[in-house]
Image 1 (cartoon, helix red, strand yellow):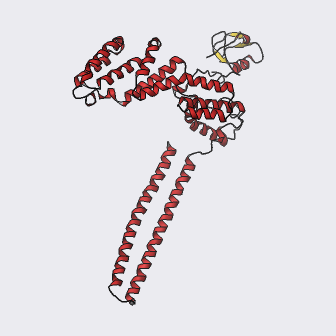
Image 2 (tube, rainbow, N blue to C red):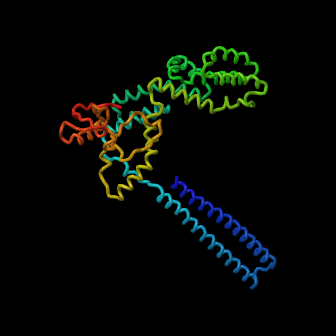
Image 3 (tube, rainbow, N blue to C red):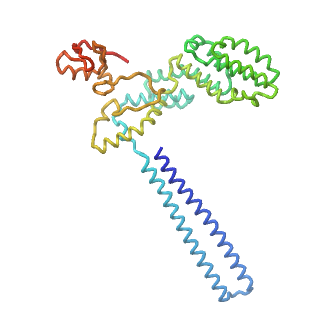
Length: 395
């Protein structure tokens, strides 16, 4: 944010300078026009072909003034160009444009295919089927990976279409889906069904007084099962009948039919549907990009520190980052374990091991504590045990 503020300050300075020069140039131009008009009038009053000495002196004086003001405007214009070029320098100084130091160059064919597959899945999830098909064709994606992409498309296609229908104020597909998976939704204590029926009720009521009976019938048929959880919300819905003559949009309940309510319902549907069907709500590509953008400032800082201290080669060849990156909960998909002895995150090559006393350490720490022998003492309690008795655990 400090970098953005520095650039914004420089841009505002340039804009202020530009406005000042623009106003000054307009005033100078107006003055010159008036000066030339006065000169033209003075020369025309003579009515002779030959200019008098006084008229020649006036003409030369006017030309000199015009040249001087033209030079002043040119100088200001040149200064403005200098101020504009400083903006670029401020951008270069505050933003790192070369991120190659944070990337790996040893990409192989497997990683390339994986990236293409992730991109194709993302395009299908966004409804860009033609782009996804073109990508699969032009990158010569292997048949098994292409079939996996097409399968993921079919799984998400129905959810995507229903989500778009909600945003287009069409609730029928979503209501049918919610009825089909009503048991699963109730087990997850979801609010989706109530939110959808509430919007459907308000849609009917918004048609006017003549649809009042239809709205009452709909409420009797669909709200009874929600009384236990949403009694207060249903009472508020019944209060909307009072404002039918003037319209709900002109009542205290106008927020219930706002666009935000439809957006909220679409989000709840997408979240619950993906959860029930075992599909990620966000595409892998969007998760990677968003998480990467979150981590990028910290990675740039640690890279600069490593370069200044001439510490090389301890990052690029490892599968873990040199520092912990704090990500939002939505980007956390599995638990992790950091060894309390070595302060390192465990991995497949260095898995967590549970000692007979119940404490958990990493495999590397286990070998260091045993020091080549089979007997070790737990670092947290004085229990002696054999290293081969430690059991690998999974989080």
